[in-house]
Image (cartoon, rainbow, N blue to C red; front, top):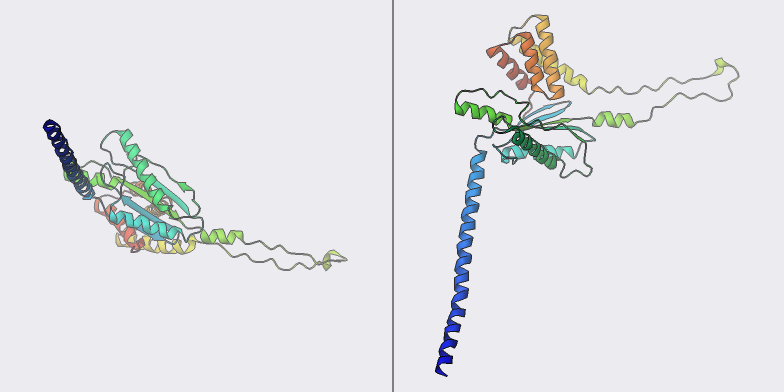
Length: 292
């Protein structure tokens, strides 16, 4: 009988100690999870350091914006996310806008990885832009990987090279307005009608044709664009007509197609070098930029 009581007490003691041991293991696991989570957050915040600020240019024809990403990441920091969020809000008020989204990556690392990064970056921006839209618009553009850098990655020092690469980890967004054109195109065109019972061709009374409103979204922008480019060219002392024509055509094509490389090609044709080249680009940007 005494042996039975002794074993019973041992079993009760074991049952009491087991929950305590399990609780201690759970607490240890929670500490490990918290430490891992804090390390992950700290690593994510460090990766966002050095990410360029977003840029946005507005014209009467639409909006061109560029948002930037951290290395090996398809996540947006707060500043770049706010730009996409603002464009998402504006899209809700536009009638069938033309939207193009192009994804890019920097040149370090395998080409396949950079292609995948540019695709994921493009996909996340498209998802954010269209998240609150009732009908999903057609999105143009593609993911280019490392094949279309915004700036060449040729710096000799590590810091300058990283700054160049940061400029290439980007998504370029172009939104063209066509709400006015779409609404005007829906209006019926009234045709002249003939009065009945005409006894001769001279008795036909044809009312004057209805004048349709002229649709010219680009007129105002053309005037503003020519004014800005002429002013910049005058300040730089570029007087030759052929040079002015090449540069103006290149700048306009770069804005219309959202491709800065077209402007670079025009400056190459015109022979702009060094400070003059940079001053022309900065002058155009300052003249056409609207504060976001």
